[in-house]
Image (cartoon, rainbow, N blue to C red; front, top):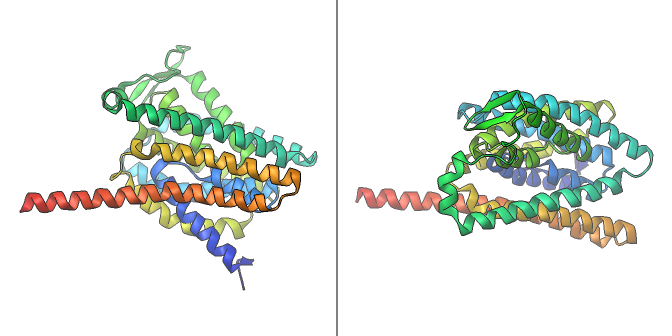
Length: 334
């Protein structure tokens, strides 16, 4: 039995995966293509389709979150506009690299290696940072809102004032956006898992504003990126549609969880998920190089398992906090 041109089992898998990624997106502000694209590559889809469909999924799922965070006043429109300009330029450059590598028959290998390195590095940094927060959480909480970003010391005019953060050089913002855009177009990601850390650690933007601004930028850059890939036949709607259907539900759960769960409390899970994605792609590449098909299955299990782990942590902590608040209300009314 086929629905939307794909088997029922695959359809259910895509919808379920969409729910998991929607939860992650609503909570962390990450579009989820950093999991979708390698998962599609592992499942045997052509690199161009995996990248293009990943970007299309990012666009669709981010629209909902952007509207939600806008209503909460968690969007720095000036920063989002600057990031959008530079990221969009970078995406076009990244797409050109992918098409060139594809014509040379090197796209799959190069992108897989890039995924392993990038996800591994970012994931390791997030885990390290999370452990530091847990060791000295009180001190960090006191300084969090006013901590200067890594790039705040670069005073190359003109300077741009940001919401809840020190002023940052315009050229630094554009450079960071361009680099993220190249990676987004090259790897088929919306850039969320790079932009949010860049805004938080690089610019000193508060976490809530970083998430909201990130999602708005992802909406625009993901739309541009998916349009560019669609022109070259790189978007498969039979993949994107069920993923979006699942993520619509998951995003509502994840967004609601932001008011219940302390993000620092489960940030380490997010870092481990990124590391898991890196390991999955590495395992898959080894399997291809040595003709071990079983490693493709292992790789897919790692990717899905990583999403289940973090999504489950978000839901579990949300339910626990709701129960805690209910008990407090009962005790106060007694």
